[in-house]
Length: 231
Image 1 (cartoon, helix red, strand yellow):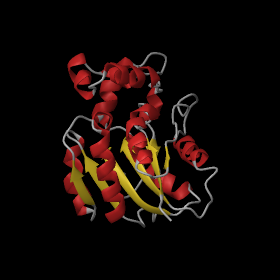
Image 2 (cartoon, rainbow, N blue to C red):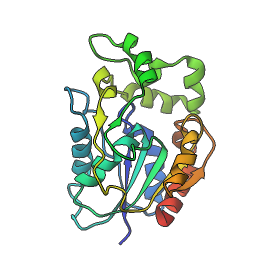
Image 3 (cartoon, rainbow, N blue to C red):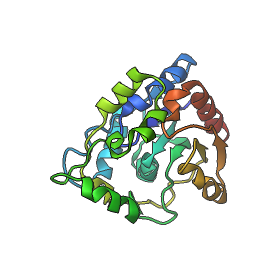
Image 4 (cartoon, helix red, strand yellow):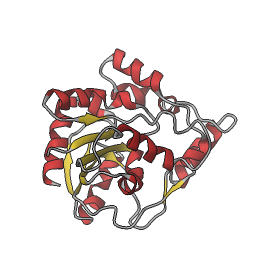
């Protein structure tokens, strides 16, 4: 049975960032689910159980024995161990797409101290601006090739609470009992290629910005399928 591809977006953005790739995969005959994590920041910590719940909800109508492949982007990679542990479905492979790697031994902090130092002055009543509002236009514009796609992605973004980035996520034992691989676009996540290989992971590169999957959904979909098949 062909695994269902579960495309998990970073909680900092929204499911629209996976939509072009999902459309490519669906057109190619793959079964795809794109859970929405937009609601996870509406109340306080802990946040990670709501991430797990959103993925479980997206698979609610899928029989428990049906295999899945987890595909995570950006800091959704830090949640993959708890997602894996919380599913009733066998996970055949996991693909980290320009995604952070969980700690070898948990818990994993969502943000490094220097990022928290950058974020704290932005918080108003404990809540941060949208992710694309953190950066200068010169940093944001290259991530988008289509103004309509940019509008959709930007307007969908949540305003997460600061304590989302202050959380630490558990790393259950045995979560990586299946093939894992990484697809990397560019800085800063391409620096993770060495660590991924040290962990025995296959690594592929598709040069681009952090949201390159909305610019080149065809290439991204092709790499995901290849990595999921070979681990």
